[in-house]
Image 1 (cartoon, rainbow, N blue to C red):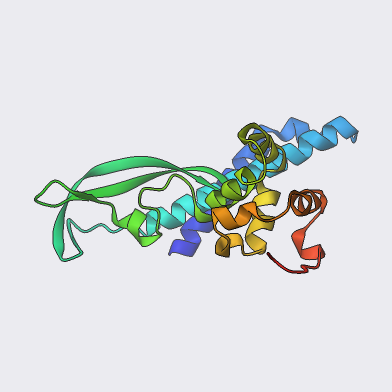
Image 2: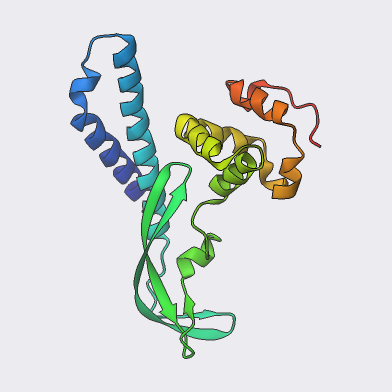
Length: 194
């Protein structure tokens, strides 16, 4: 059932964006129009992927009125909306918030995918830490604005999860510049990590 719902949401989102921008897709081939078409397709794909992730997560949400966590009973209290930054863009989720008799809150959905007290998915947090370890914040912001998804995908493919923020600072700036210039991390042979 989840797969059908996810496929339907992704397809609907991608189609709606492409249909809204149909006139740009019909434009004649020029450098400017090619850039616009790439932007339209990229927006459709990212929006569809974000919608698919959102659907998958919300389909996984518990519907119970009472849950047990760390030996304590939590009662359903309300729906809580939160925005997460994913590698596909922003995803806004409506999550079920539970409270125990002491007023402590628990959100099973956040707990299930390790997003308690987080604003971004793991790959986004890693990419941001890596970039901030090598450049000023304004340059990192510009880097992500320019590169968006490809940088995140490339960083994730190099399994940088094992590099902590202090360790990431020891990676040379030249290595970072070479990686950004490369079309793909996968095409480069990794010599060794510090």
